[in-house]
Structures are given as structure tokens and as C-alpha cells.
Amino acid sequence: MSKLNADAFLEKVKDRGIPEERIDTLKYSIDFGQWLKGFNSVEDSVRDSVITIKNHPLLAEDIPVHG
Image (cartoon, rainbow, N blue to C red; front, side):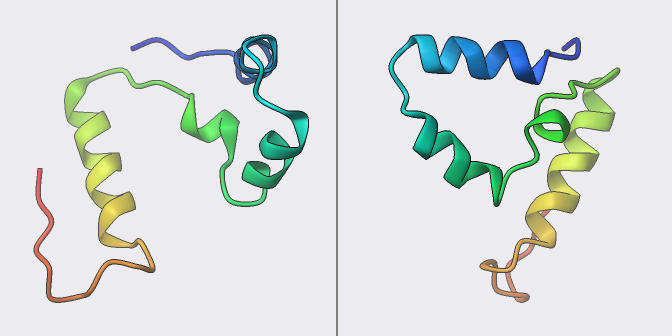
């Protein structure tokens, strides 16, 4: 998947009726540029997803995560 432009994406979200306040709230927990960066290979994508999930603060440590 190629990199998406976060600003263009957010403009489309607003055009579809998502309130600016909701987007602002999400900006506290989501780095849109990082989230929409894309990947060069499926392996990179899976590796990044596994790392993100394994390190999520709401995931119990005894739950196995693999990709």
C-alpha cells in the first residue's frame, strides 16, 4: 500500500460529515501521518502491526500475538 496523505485524508473525512471536534479528539491518541504511512511489503506491515498490538496498554501480557 502506498503512503496516503494525512491532510488530504482528513479533508475527505470532514467532507463526509465527521465533525472537526471528533478529529481533534482523535489526534491526541492517533498520529495520522504514522497511521497512514503505508508499507513497502506485507512483511513490514505485519511486523509493525504485531509490534503495535503486543505493546498496546490494554492487551494483557499473557495473550500471545503473532503474525
